[in-house]
Length: 354
Image 1 (cartoon, rainbow, N blue to C red):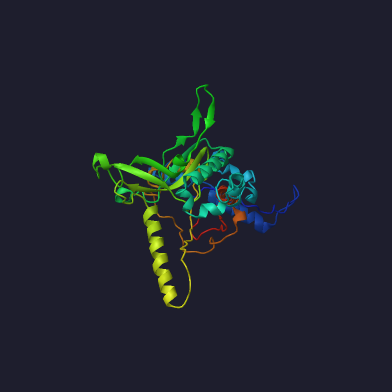
Image 2 (cartoon, rainbow, N blue to C red):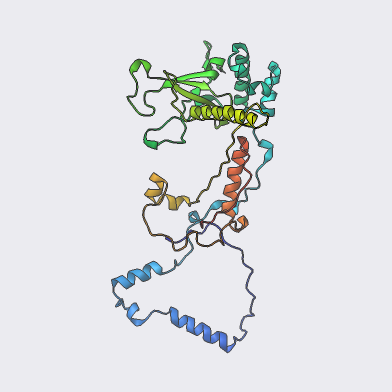
């Protein structure tokens, strides 16, 4: 019920008083009164206050020693440092990063902005080879078509799915090599009978088909190259959340362009953008593992409402340096986002105390 200290505040040391120096009568009287207030009564010492009062005193009594080291965030004593922009976009196949691997094949990243290369088998083979070389240099040994399937009853919205396949191929001599072809890049096939829930289609139409999404660049996380893809059924119906999004964006572009042209504004298309915001609460690891509700449903279901919520604004946009562990967590997140080309620019504290 009480807060867990993430980082200590720095206070100036108190003014030192020489040993043996006399105290003023006022200070001596105040200290005597405070000592008397802290001293337990004879009834409490003898255990005559009743079990309820004894239990309350046991809970309210401050700890006799500092919390163990694992109750505090260890990162607070090890400065993380600012995010390094040298690695920005290193693990995303687009822009200058893609150019360095496409130029030996006579291609540029501009060629990827068009859908034409997905219909040209020879060009798609060159793109796949360049992408394989880039992924291997980034430490990837597998690839996966990455999609967001529809979930039954809203239990899987926003979550992703994939099947990871190794790029390693072993020849007759037993020597491994990396292989990644245009067929591996452009399409994939998986079981579509369980989306949005099981038993929706007959056995001979239960296949689900994956197609590369040229509008979203591949990226590497760990040892896997993730290829953003659309997921459709045998009948052509969308089984994911991305395909309806693309269709909606296309309809918005068509009708928006038509409206603007009627209003005298010449344009050839409209690109819809969204601004993402992510709010997080930081919970110490050992405290998290003592709360089954946080582990299973991601929110608190038991306990009392805190005495203080969002009623005050003193915590809002407070200096991040006052809690070094929180700042270092934000810096680490920002660094990882930079690696995959996410321009995370803003970090601040919210109104809710945390």
